[in-house]
Image: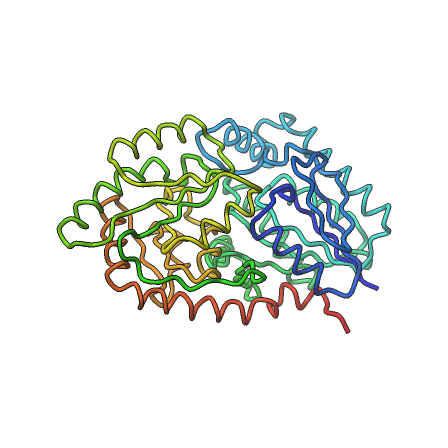
Length: 401
């Protein structure tokens, strides 16, 4: 019987579509499912029937791409290792990933019948997985299913990893899934014409969505995601000020923010945000009580609109779990324009904007024609839920019976 081995450096998160993907795999495949997770989990996460091996180093975020922070500087150092610049600076991390994966594959006698699922934005981890697979005899290599979460930031490093991935795809030894179709464009720019790359929308289809009524006195806008600079929390007060002017002129419902705060990565930013919101006298509620997953879905359930005033310069090739949550929850979406995020606004289930004034105007437009936007959001949610479980990402992993 085939085995599914999931390499998930973000498994400690109590919500999000990585966890959802793992849940769907665990409940739909016939073979054995194992998850390689970080060695230290802040909160235990259990999946029925799934063996969780806590072997990955906890500092898996060394290769994420959050700009302007220590994490980003470490990320650039990590990239330098693969391009010959600064070799040795993070070799211990790369070596540890490689050794852990090599030892585990050897322990379980990995074979061609097995599948390795990697959903990560960590270039260090992806490179380690490729290293171990490429060292195996071709007859023994498992099938790699790579879910691209965010782009590799360093061009030379991206070229090396994409070339290696493209070779495995052509040998029918790997499949690539992307949260946005632009990943295919990126590969094409590097000279790899891989027609089989598929856009993957991972969603939490297990939660019933509740249709929302047209706002009357207040329009409740959910602001989701971790509190950090790139998510646009510093813009909320200014957007509220612009909207207040429009609401006063056009007698529209007043704005009320519902702010997810179960996961605060930048406390100073959070405190400044609260001070600025108080200064413009906008109503808001901070939702932070209970497990992160419950906080997240309470915000989604109780809101009229989900707003994402993200820094578009950081989302040129990135997907967004928040946008996916908005789609599957049948909520109209306001999202940053001129970047990958625009791909989530389809069939007028929402609008894109750039400036603070444009976000306020977009919110005003959605409120004015809320029934239409809401109906379109419901149609899209039903369509996504219908096709989701049959996506090739899951179908290729094998189904019961």
